[in-house]
Image 1 (cartoon, rainbow, N blue to C red):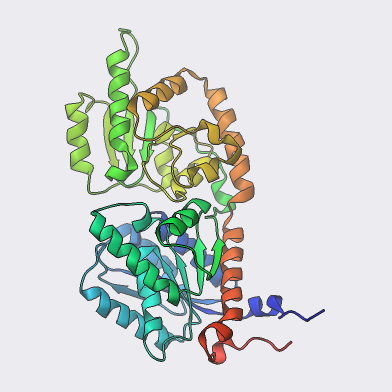
Image 2 (image 1 turned 180 degrees about the vertical axis):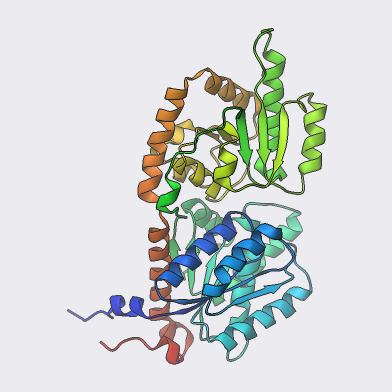
Length: 408
């Protein structure tokens, strides 16, 4: 039998890893920060490249805590969501930065981060580093003008040639990439987002908690208008003079806040809807008894994982990778964009006892605890890096000393 390369030995090598992303907020940022801490704990040297115009004080606080541990430091640049002419200069700067750091792995997250991370491979003499890419949904989930969408997918197809390993965060986004970009012979892995053991502690709602809670960005794709419609339907159908209509707390920030506030007023439920601003997830969970996730599109949302771990009763739509999180309990999910169906589920949930809701939440938490861990996420990412390193010499030319694999 032919001897195989000693992958265990290759995986033990300490790597220089540079993560590139756009906005330091939301689930994508959390994924990168969790992965970075775990990679540092395993002895790897890690650095970050992130946008300097978003994230606010919360991002600054997170980055200030992790920066002393980053052997490759933090580089912040103005990175816009939409394509711009300065993307080319940013991409060149990041390529020079990664080469100066001697990065073994340049790992791009999200559409913009993925483009920046892989652009450097077009430049002569910059092709030695392994280029990893995790889409995180991004332009694959959120559609704009057809011409713009076609252009973004054309860029994705062009950048496939510079990708050594795809690390998809859900089976859903992996299939969506296949449909919109096309099949690839490149190395492909599905790496599920993970949680830490400390997150699997139930959160008890405050005594004055609202009946329903939303946590996330205030954007149209999140389906919050459908939730407001459903609350309005419940109020219009409640004929009891003694019953109080259900309240809703919206936690988060985003471009649709004023529009949603106006919409709640137009639906005559402004007295039932509270905008609480941005809060850490576990703090937000105390503000409501049932979390509602009415999204129209998702990849593998952390808020659903976090709520499941905290045993928060949940109503969610069957979009993106949410079904992968619910696993054997996927039949609890509902279609998106239908206020009538959502209102019926809200009413059904109000009729259930606290014991019934907690029993369902505990079962989901047990499933998530087995399948979605930070340790497993980091293992899978590092295994993807290792396999890409092993393939690199034959795929992309002569490696530098950083990529020399142990002898057989």
